[in-house]
Each structure stands twice: as C-alpha cells, then as structure tokens.
Length: 562
Image (cartoon, rainbow, N blue to C red; front, side, top):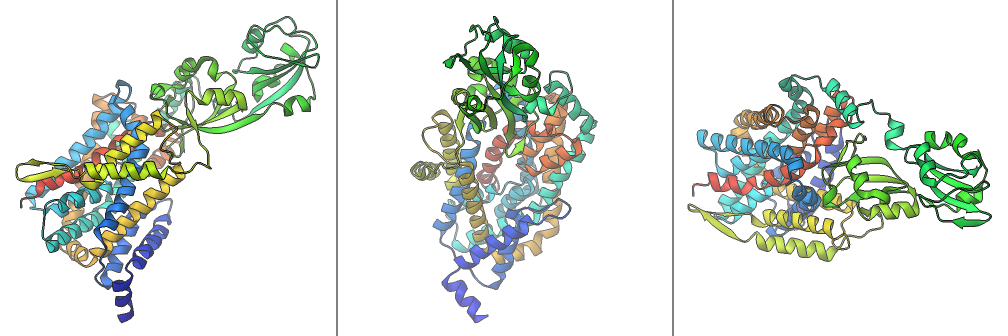
C-alpha cells in the first residue's frame, strides 16, 4: 500500500490515464444492446480509485482538458447552431429551450425545498439532464467566487457525487422515454407514423431504396442508331432517372456533350446513372457496345461532402437540386448521414449543416457539384493547430469577464468562453472552408480525451469526499434525478406535438437531440423500423449542447448564498 501511495504522490497522472482506459473499456460493454456510456464509467472508476489516497492535479490541467472538450463541442455544433436561428427550424429550437428551461426550474425548486448546496445542485443538473459539460462550467463558476480551498474542494466533490448518482439513471430513462413513453403521450403508433413520413419524403409513394439512394450506379457505352437526329437533352429526358450523357466520340474525335448537341448515327456515347435507367436505354439509343477504353477514360468518383453552405440549411433535396441547377447534373446522392446515422432519402428529405452527402458521378461533375454544397472530406486533412489554440485562448479570455447578479458575480468561466469560441470558430469554418480545418476523427479524439481526462481528474481528486456525499444524499438524489429527467421530456413532448405541431417521428428524434443522448435515436429507429427519427436530431442537439452547458454558471449564481 505504501508503494501505491508513493505512486499517487509522485505520478498521479498514471492513475488518471488508467481511469480513462478502464472507464472507456467498461463504457463499451453492451448488455442486450445497452451500455451506460464512457463518461459515467470513467467517473465511477475514478471515484473508486480515488479511495486509495489523496490525488492532486494542477488546475491548469483540468482547465486545458475541459477547454479542449467544450471547444470541440462548439466547433462541431457551430454551423448548425447559428443556422438553426431561422423560421424553418424554429420549432426544434423551441423544444430544446423548453427542455432546458424546465430542467433548470426543477433544479432550483429542489435546491430551495431541500436546501441543496451549490455543488449538489450543479451535479444534479449535469447528471439528470445528461450534459457532462455542466460539471466544467459549474466548477469554473465556483472557482470565480473566491472560496477557501477546502470549501471549493467539497463543492467540486458534491458536483461529482450528484452527477455520478443521477447520470446513469438519467441516461437510461432517456433511452426508454424517447421510443416508448413519448409515442404514448402523443397517442401515436411510431411505426405507422414512420411509414407515413417515409411516404411523404418520397413524394407520396412508398420509398424504393435502390431508386432513392442510387447505390446501383454505373456507366455504359452505346452506339447511336435509334437516337440519331435527337438532342442530348431530349435523350436524357426520355431515359429519365437523371441519367446524363457523359461522353460523345464521333469518328474518333471527342465532342463536348451539351443539351442542344444533336446525336448522329454511329456516335459512340457513354451514359451514366442508376442501373435500372441506363439498362433500359437500348431502345432509345441503339446497341450497347463493349468499349472498355471509352469507359476507362471516364474517371468515376465516390466522395463524401460536408454540407457547409448556410443557404442549404433546412431545405429539401428537391429544393437543393433546383438551386444547384446544372451543377447537379450527372451527380447522384448515394447516402446522407447525420451525426453518424444514415438519413432516409426522398425528394422532401431536409438537409442541415453538418450533414455528410455521399456523392457518386464522374470526377468532373462531382467537383462542380461540391463547391456550392461544402467541401470534400479528406482523410489526409490535418488539424489547424494554430486556429484551434488561438480559438481556445480567445474563449478563455472571454470567460474571465463577469457581471453581478445581486452579490454573485455571474461568469461563463473558461469552459463557457471556450464553448462560445468553438461555436464561432465552427461557424467561421463553414463560411471559409480554407481555414480552421479539424477533421471529424480529430474532433472525436479531442472530445474524448478532453472530457475523459477532465472527468477522471474530478473523480480522482474528490473521490473520498464524493463517496461520502453519495452516501449522505444518494436516495434523495435518485428521486430528484428521476423528476428532473422525466418532467422536462414530458413537457417537451406535449409542447412539440400539441402546440408546435411537430411531426411525432421527428419529435422523438428531437427529444434525443435536446437531451444530447443521441443513442436514444437508435431505440426510436428500432421501434419505428425506420431511420426517420434521425431527421429531428441535428438542430436540437446543437442547441441543447449550448443551452444545457450554460446552465452550470446559472445554477451557481442562483443557488450560492455566500
């Protein structure tokens, strides 16, 4: 045991990394498809390891780790957050605000009725509303109060205790509420409503996967006979399926395909599009030919494009195709993903900033279509470290500003400032893709390391006190946590469906997004037997991340009595 104490005193970072590693492994374990999540596991492991002795970490370490996490969250959510401030997505924004406001009101009521200290109230907020970043913003706000070190340490321990007790329960309740309880409150059959929404997205007819997603896309060569004397525009219109003539070779010479170009007998042409359409083109054009060289010289491409054009936010695929005009010619959408989940495709499917389009077509056509949409994702992209560091530095500087509410100085703190800086930097990146690169893989790494390290430091540094707080307030925290989790979602469901008139399937996805528990969408999709709940996640998730995070300093200001 003496050896363990020596290691704790000499190199506590070893245990911090162990807590991250063990917590991450435990967080990946699924029992019947369910896991309690990496964040909660890291905190629980850290609190348990914290019973071994007294861990001390420099405040600057926790500040940097948390800043990396919240800046990344802001960077990821920035384009969607600012674009969500529009009429098209207003209902989803209101839903996220209703859930945040209801949760805050309940926490403040409980704090007054049960005389909760500030740390416990903040921990209850973070855990029951399933927003880990509240721990950091509340801790930062407490640090600005000039409390004695022992008092500050106890308050941080109470935050950890409140979070540890209520997070797992809040997470589980959210996973159950979204697919099972919310549909009952709306008095709907989620599966039947999902089928209706799919039909609406497909323009009133049941969706056909192979036609909507263009997975069976290819190019074929024909020698013109039946199509002689007709223009390319007329040929493409008759073949349908947005098929395009990619190449014309006449007497060994390439002819540039244009809508008014007239085909001649003996022309060799290459057409590209969905397999079903181009296979049926033979009676319209002529005999199919084996022209390997002709096809080899037509470079094809499949590329993922990040949607960054604010003018496309909230618009349907039909509207986007119309806006792109000729730029969309010869380009096909194979898939649309949102927060890592595939979105059902149809003419009325709406696209949001941050979505990823998988485009198929010739290299030239895709390059033409990519520019007005966003930028192509490149796995070789490197993170712009200068942009990242400068953005966080500006955010931390802004977090030093404060103003008083009564006798309490209200401040965003370093975490809140880094969050705002991340939002602005993410938005700026969407407007000027040439600066501030941070590939999705890098975003996930910074987020995981930042949050995991911060949570581990909190748990280790306050393990002994946190365990005592859990023993003292455990049952009371459980009861309050259930209320603070379920009531906001219940109010949000009723407001969304009966007042805002949101589609019930979209409402389920929006509830998961507003609670920032994107895993709840998976349950809704399983019950609906459809991916349509994903349509409601993006905007509430972006707004929820911001709204819930800033609750930390608000709770501190409202509950601290000096």
